[in-house]
Amino acid sequence: MDADTGTSAHLPEEFVIRELLDASDLDALEREHGAAWADSGAVLRFRHLRTAARYWLAAALGDERAALSAPIADGWEAFTSVEWGAVHMRDAVNSELKAFSMRLVEVDGHGALEPQFSVDLLQVAALQLALLAADGLNARRCANETCGRGFVRQRSTRRKTTNRGEYAGTAHAVGVRYCSAECGKAQQAREHRRRKRVEKGDSA
Ligand SMILES: [Zn+2]
Image (cartoon, rainbow, N blue to C red; front, side):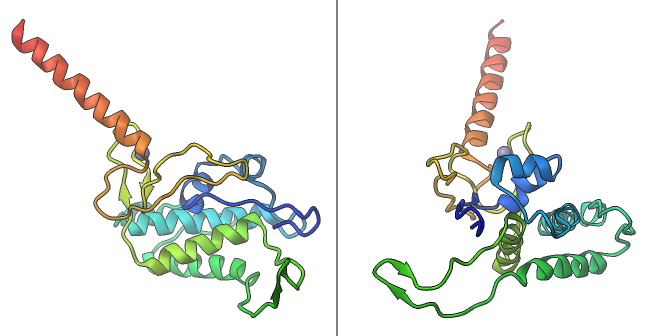
């Protein structure tokens, strides 16, 4: 929710370990998903949060080496231990979570009787990372050969389903091999083509 413009947007699930990690820089992320606060060191916040997300995903994949090589923000030394990575993640996420406070709000027929709660893109992404970590689920790598993305729950589709940028349901965390339904279809088609080629080779 942007207090100045009164606009709000929904972030796709696992945004913090997908779009945020895919974005080349903060500008690219903001063009697609809305702005971070302009006046609060957003680039540095972005770098720290991205390092935290890379660290968490690598750790949740059981990939200690990748967790240690999460490139940290300029001017920071590389992690030399998994514990250091975990401490960095804790501090980076907690710093963003200060934007959130639990409280009761009066509501009437028209909605909340208080000004809208206002948080930015990076703060919401940090909340996602905190909730992912709190879920205690393992991550896995997408079994689509050309993807290999780390994920927790499969996205049933990457297509935006509403003009507010919501994505269709992402329910499955257990027994899934692909990060998205599209990746499942792509890999199955690839394996089908391979079997066909083998069959042709046999009969030739
Ligand atoms: Zn995939």
